[in-house]
Image 1 (cartoon, helix red, strand yellow):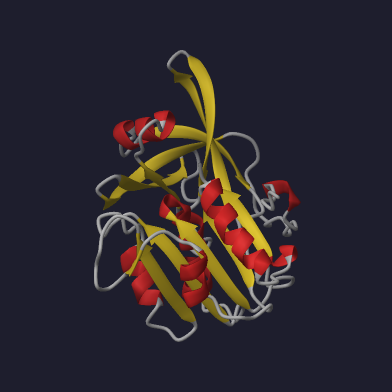
Image 2 (cartoon, helix red, strand yellow):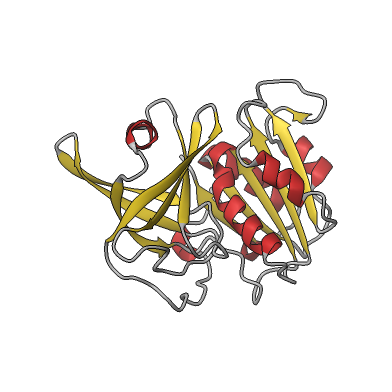
Length: 260
């Protein structure tokens, strides 16, 4: 049985107070190389400067590409910056085989480039009013991006909820560690637990192999008072959700976001 739930079925959060409606012109103000094939693009509003909308950590922006190979296209990218960073908004883009639009963004966007975007959209967010006080985030590859936003918001703002945060992330190799330096800084604090596995490299500081039931059993505590958030390819999330459901975790405590 397929237990994966769609975005729309996750409990809605209150809309942020300040939002610029419709398509916004966003100008690139900085580009950071995160890994050998991943860049973070930071934007401000091209008309008014700064960030002219509010958002919840875990939401995404939809970008419009009007003249992409002769036809308009729209693509959504999760916001990787934190709502605490009021002066800009960032997305983190990984160059992949067959990633037509992402690869174009990676190769062609420059400081000063302007894209049109709308949002923020999506409900893949931690809600302190309804979710458990232990948040467990599980990601594969570029599926780490919403958790960078969520971790930055909750850790840098010193939010009291959740009381415990855990992150399990699967990377291909030590050259693919998106956000790793900041995550290891968070892990120095008692409330943040960090676990990482490598699927294509052996390294003494990391677990080895793909995320499966055996690995999950090593790092996930036996407790029903945990909210799980999963982000990555559908097969990855199916493996994790099947394990969690088999351990008695309620569907209401499992949130999913698919990164193809």
